[in-house]
Image 1: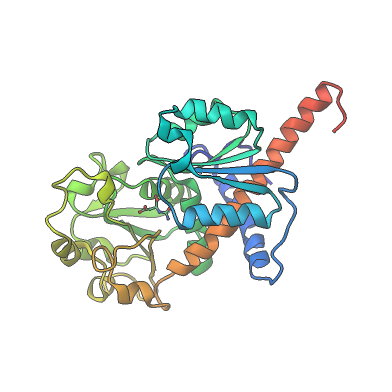
Image 2: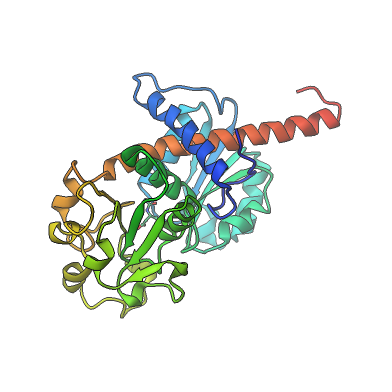
Length: 320
Ligand code: NCD
């Protein structure tokens, strides 16, 4: 098993072998999660704190379930009611929490780089659950597991990532991961929602051309909260040109899968009928894989944490 990370802050620092290790372990947790009794002891005795400075449904819920199914004591910090609203800085909050000796800290924050900064101030393992437009590593890992299960491989696939690329940490983490695994990645969307350098990928403004022959069609939410006006003409016009409907999907391979990280704006970036079509859409599989991938991530980080602490204790001559 190869997984040398102390934190999971992004896909960028991961070697392909580490990604494969994590996905293989997640497969075992998929099996566990399908049993009636979903219990393992990888995090027994450890304390996990979830700190979400941005709204979240599936990510927060799945990190909570992941920790509990592995036996951790899980606390969700109610950020809206915490001292953060009284003006406490992120670092002060982190130091306060650190003094309570958590072992795993799961953080979502609206600023890119905030989670890394926090990781440098605490003693526990930190998982980035999304920082600004930067990275959302567990989302890319759960997407990778979903693709690998649906397509039987994670290499040599043509993957179209469509929509609001510029504001999307999901797009960034995904294209880094899928690039490391040697896939062909296309970015499809309006020029106003495309990063200036196109992240070095093939860029298409025309949806039909971008989807031609694709194995995977990954749709993204239009992130209105990160826009300050003037990015798109109107929701109706956006759907007409870049919303995924049956006609546009017909350009992709006949067995192409449709993905969306959620939450969806039905009728804006995706037609509701396509999203609900279980022959094409793997959106619910993504949610299922999310719990398993987060269990695998927490498990691997906990192993490294125990190994590090064990080594330190041995050096100090303390028996653990
Ligand atoms: C994404 C996020 O928060 O980055 N959602 C998620 O984690 N499932 C994508 C989004 O908000 O559009």
